Length: 89
Image (cartoon, rainbow, N blue to C red):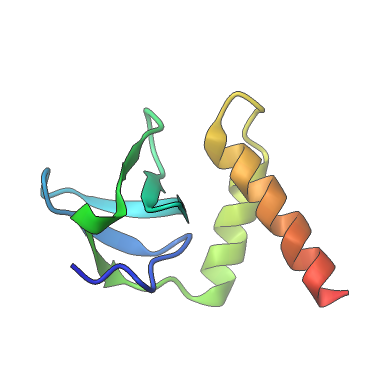
């Protein structure tokens, strides 16, 4: 399955379960999905269904940034937003 372009906010189909997920983040060959419970899947098991628009991606990151410190998706969103802001100068 092609995995090279999957990013936050994209929709993917998870092969083993047949479920379609919204992507929270991708790191080190693993994909975290939105929803409960939080979890990780092998990126290689996921196929891109629909790309998120840039505005959708940022909106999701801002929403996830409000999640508490005990959730990996919130930590990721805060770190990515900080890196994006730094890159913009």
